View 1 (cartoon, one colour):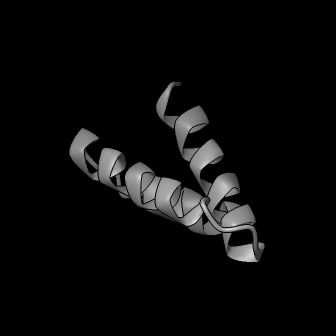
View 2 (spheres, helix red, strand yellow; view 1 turned 45 degrees about the vertical axis):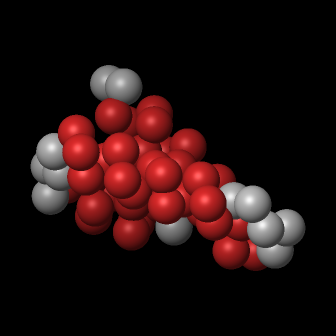
Length: 52
């Protein structure tokens, strides 16, 4: 998950793209399965990296 997130961020997405990705990931976290766990991890990584 970290590798895919780093690859996404290395493309230097604009603010709107990051906002959209975070919204999609938030929707995926609603489930209680492995997908939700991975979405939470990805979302956390994006938020941390975007705030740097």
